[in-house]
Amino acid sequence: MSAPAMDQITRERLTKAARACRVLDMEGHGDMTLGHLSVRAENDAGFWMKRNRIGLGEVSGPEDFVLLDWDGTQRGGDGGRHSEWPIHSEIFRARTDVNVVVHSHPLYASIFSAAVEPLQPYTLDADYLIDVPRHEADVALLAQQSQGTALARALGQHFAVFIANHGVTFCGTTIEHAVCVGIFLEKACRAQLIGSAAAVRATMPERAVRERRRSEIMTPVHWEHCWRYFCRKLDARSGHSGSGAVFG
Image (cartoon, rainbow, N blue to C red):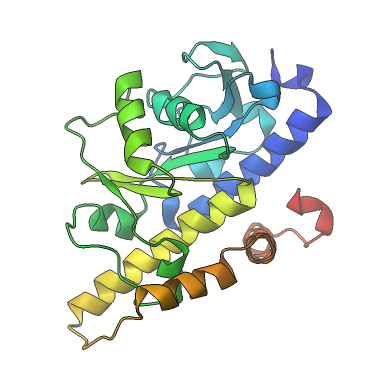
């Protein structure tokens, strides 16, 4: 199935997913042509994944996604699939609440993925993500389903996981949710690396305080406000005049 044959709902979702790719690139998740975002297909018929050979910032619309089934067979779209498709298929299989999966190599989170210490709340950003797990992998690419299954197991019920000495994988119930998780994870890692390098004498809130703070910010209303801000910022950079229609 080529892009023009998509139904209208799918086209709208992938238009929004393409915008999410560009927002993530703008916020530090771009790394040449590496990194990929996927959305669960309608009727659980697999997932739409950003095609390979282009960067996150180059994803322009629905034509830049390919449809894969749960075993990685390409069922629609033009272009090729990323070799790390099992990251997406196995998280979707394990987490019925997840509708968007992203793997990327943001600078600060990728550096922090090598750390054995936990992510600390130097800033409020870290309270999006309490107890971020860390997955050890002895390969450069997670290109086998067994490797994707192991990563999904490490992720558990969290929405982000560090891949040691590599990068991050994060996910969400919606596009807005996943984008916020990825951006605030990178901000939290940046804050900790800068704070620890400066050797500041820091106090950290207790877990109960952190959980209360998370309940106040980890909400659909907050995701929507942040998403619309990032969309306006993206439009300003690309020279477009903002319009409510572009947020879809």
